[in-house]
Amino acid sequence: MDRLLLSQIDEELASVEVAELCFLCSDVLNRKRLEGIKDAKELFVRLEEKGLLENSSFLSQLLHSIHRADLLNMLENDGGQVQETDASPFLSDYRLMLYRIHEDLSTENLDKMKFLLKDKLAKRHLDMNSTALDVFAEMEKAGLISNKNVNELHLLLLEFDRELAKIVEDYMKSLRLSPTGHLREQRQAPRASSDQQRPRDYRQSVQPSLSMCETEPCLRAETTYSDNTRQAALSDEEEYYILNSRPRGLCVIFNNENFKGPKLSRRVGSHADNEALTSLFKRFGFEVNTHNDLTAMEMTGTLQTLIRRDYSREDALVVCILTHGEKGIVYGTDAKEMKLEAIMQPFNNRDMPTLKGKPKLFFVQACQEERSQEPVCPGQSPEDDAESGTSEQFSEDACRHEDPEDEVATVEDVLGSDVLLGMATVTNHKSYRHTVKGSLYIQELCKQLQKAAESPDNDDILTVLTRVNREVSNNHLPPKRQMPEPKYTLTKRLVLRFI
Image (cartoon, rainbow, N blue to C red; front, top):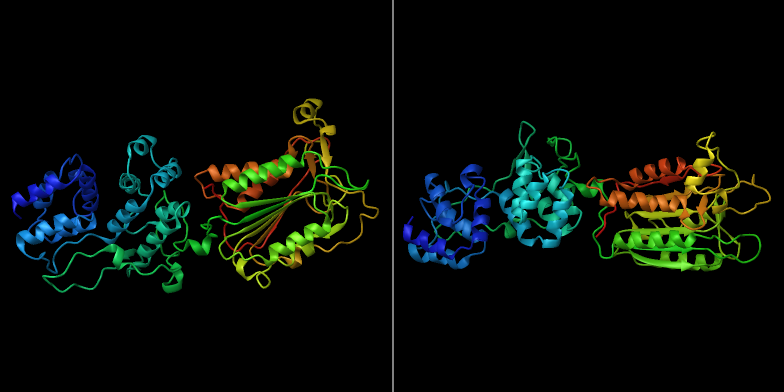
């Protein structure tokens, strides 16, 4: 190609654009040959050495990809229409896919991506990377992504930008299995040589986004993963509940602290649970509605409103009930019973179609009877009591029932699909609440959910609840033990992240 023309193009390109061109050329030039390039003239020399500038085709693709139509016009005006033959090299869909993500990734989301990669890439490399292309290059060096495996990138983008994740999904759909079982990139049919043919635009070539396994056989079983890549399915919508709406969903808190009559005592310290749940789920991106001191009839009315609500624009529902209780029931502030079975039954896919396939979470902080569990440490010392607080600082969320042996219906038979019920204690036993710090269960639940949200690992809600079980049961609470109990019919993994 004409050296004068290349020099003119070089003068028009900013250093950021040169870096972008180098990234796009990573599949046709050795990485070391691209290191240290400061201007376009150096890049053109490397391309000439590889025979990539014998005609204007490859350079026109590069300029078209970075949206420099003015420079593309210079090529056409200098030598007629852009030349292209069947043998012309062209930019890979993989490289164009990464470049498109780089273009649309905000500075805030770039910072989030770098944070999530801290345990996988060296800190000095992340600190030096100022663009998404730099991060992608480091991920390639570490074996986290390649043209045949972009699962790690897909998982990252799902955390903060569902639209960008769809770009990766579209690229995944363009892959096919080779006869040896390895993934290969699906190329377009050979292109006829044409003087009028323009470089391919990745934005125009992608198909409308669909769930990956709706149109193609799922590639999960055959995909070969590197040691650094989490073994997640390509079709994450089949593995994970997708939370990307704004707000993510609705969180409703029933906080009953003050009760009427002598039967039920005041639940001192419940405000701490309410505050912890409110703060946490707001950070998760939920709309939070708190209802304080409702009678059983008022709670029923509020629940009926939730059942009639349209959840089309929300991805989840969370209901937290903080009150006194017994086996299979909770209480309104008027000391009237509400069966958990009756509370749970309406939240099913038939009666609530706009919540079909979406997670419905219920957390109940209440006793389930008058029995106490055995101490975790029978030989617990007075020093242990002093460290955790005296027994006078703890209250029970139980009611003095005259006949604790009466059989009450359980909720297991009414749980529909995609439901999780987190109980503060197992059936027939008490739960405990600190009069200042809040209940053992809710406080530990919020603590573990926050730790999981801040972790780079994709710990789902069931993993979190297992940790809650361990920590609550190991609590040196004088004088007895508490063991929470989760029940669930979730069909996917649910990962809660801060937004």
